[in-house]
Length: 156
Image (cartoon, rainbow, N blue to C red):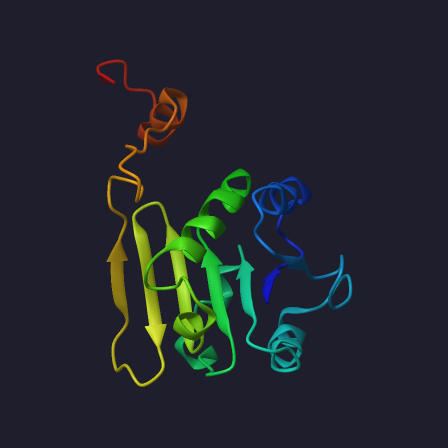
């Protein structure tokens, strides 16, 4: 069961559903609206193999590891959530519930950093420059320029 935190915008949830990604959202169709952070972990324990997606980076803690759920912290812009949720769920390391359970993942533009049960250290998985089908990932020029700052010498 893929659970989106209440802090995920409605348009991102709708986009995931349009793509055929099965998701539920706290306060919309599971849990209740206004759940506090400290209520989320006990709530996850009541579900079967949930993967919880949030933009709250406070959930990226080793002490929150548990064999019965996965926490995914999205260190991205709110309008990028759907793309990165789908990217996590389709990645070879996380493409089944069994592979995700017992993991706390932080997702950013550079890749994944994660904690796993029974692992002494965190690990990193960088993103490749290509999608599985060989399509090169290109960001709109405006996004690159916004990330680089106002640099008129930058060539695209």
